Image 1 (tube, rainbow, N blue to C red):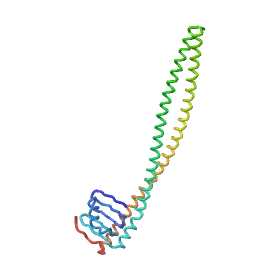
Image 2: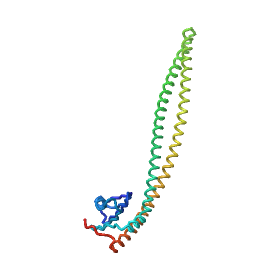
Image 3: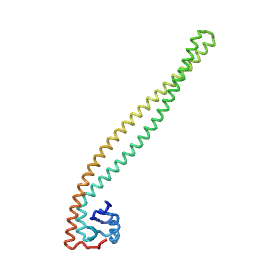
Image 4: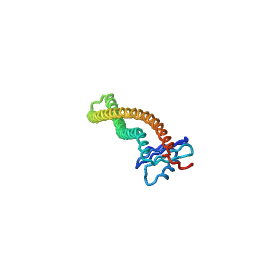
Length: 230
């Protein structure tokens, strides 16, 4: 089905057959055609200025369908490309959400790493303070031992965080590569859509010229029946 409504340009056209409809005209033209059609019959309607005609001759309807067949086929191709673009867009959206989630976790890791670094700096200051006292009593030795144990524990936590950060970096990189691949596919589909659009415009122009010739012929032979002025 192809329906294009626009401001009044002085000409309008409609072709209806079964569930298929090709209409190029105003909203008022669309309403008129629906009123003229009887029980889903095949119908060819056109308007020049204020005067309109209807064609119910099957041979002319078939010729009109043949004229618009390339336009209809290209429209289906564009629809399929649009579906593919939509599917790719959904994938890109999901990947973006995953990347955002990883980014948030990386931020948390950064904060935890900074907190560990601050704790280690505090322990280093305590050790420096103990060194400045040059005291060798048992209490000082015990304090040094406790600080060393705490520092070792912090080192283990820091290494674990670094390993997690590395793993997340790899995931982020992999997601970035997948996103880049999808971007390339989307770009390729966009170019195909643009090329199809140009072919569609050319096919529509050709079809409009051919249909005008057909309608002029039908009117000249009395096949087109006037349905009054609007």
